Amino acid sequence: MKASRYNHIVWRRNLPQLLYNSWHHRFLELDNSQSAVYGGLSLPLTYNLINQKDPSVAKLMAGLAKMEFLIDDNRDELKQIELLSQLHRFDRSRLELWICPTTRCDQNCPGCPHQDSRSDLSALGLEKIFRLISGRTPGLKQLGINWWGGQPALAWKMVLEFDKKLDLLARQFGFEYSYRTIGSGGGPANRLTALSRENELYLNIESVDLDNLPAAPTVLLGDIAGISKRKDQLPRGSRIRFIKNIPGGELCRNVNQLCHSAPNLEDEEVGEINRLLEAGFTVENLPRPKLVSCQATDPQSFIIDAAGNSYKCWEDLGVPEKMLAENTDDPLAPQNFRWLDWDPYHEAHCRLCNILPWCLGGCRARPPDADCSQWHYALREMLSLAAAANQKGA
Ligand code: SF4
Ligand code: SF4
Image (cartoon, rainbow, N blue to C red; front, side, top):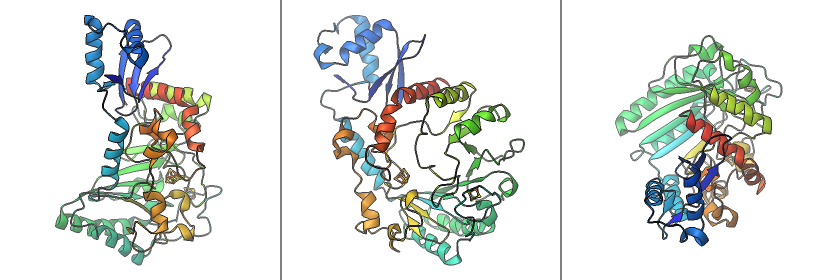
């Protein structure tokens, strides 16, 4: 047996050490003697010096093996993750669309990229999206639609009509689908007519009416300070997600950096997040293992703006040469190929990295290593937050 390369020790003040595995996202508390034994087992040099016939050692080893902290010597975890990831990526029975029905909005954020260009997705644009979905049938099993804007609630009539057509298509071909609507809360977002399928709401904490939260499953978006400031007003157990909460490039504040799987952390923010976890909130964007790094490297994910143009990466929106051609599935089109050839499993530093399952090569839109060093710089903090969230059952 050998220790999984994705094991980590989480040191906690006045508490037993935790063993954590970043692939299986499992935790195991170790007392002092177990921790010393594990220390010996985790190094090839000292592995054989541990008396494995000792009943307490044998019991610990059986537990570690059961939870895959210890694995068979011949097992190549990197290859296994690569295989599972590629099966997931190229599984055409799933499809995820990020559609902007409108850039109109009832907010007035400084720096809004849509300030002078409010527009709705045209009927032709919607038709193109519908063709993309029906082109995947039969075979499509799971479709996720994410409405973003602007304020999608202002184009709800369009969304309702689209939903009706989709419902018919789903009945005909037997696929499941669900929605997520990302917008500013309050006003029209509070009066949405229900869709035919579950519609999870991502609402901005700066504009949501906290005394009148919608009944639908809701995640509150905000920066760490903004959420912390309002924590006493939030229902216990609220789901929260950290975003930068300022507009960026072509993106509304509600979607700017929403694709990043963990917040950028300053030291004092770790304390704030810990307090939010302590208070019983569920933080949606703490590091977790995943099978694809982000929407851009997921071949089954497409972002469609209000002009009806499709992109792979949020950073590419509005850049004509990054736009996907009409046949979004052409793998050799340069705009697609750039993301399809994503392969952290053959990057030297990713192959050796013990948090690869969290980051999977990170954000390809950022300069090489910028994302990577950020993860490693804050690794101790990320591990402590993952442990705190686990302790709270989040
Ligand atoms: S940044 Fe977003 S929420 Fe703010 S005004 Fe623009 S579209 Fe509306
Ligand atoms: S490559 Fe980076 S910016 Fe682009 S979608 Fe992925 S995480 Fe977002």
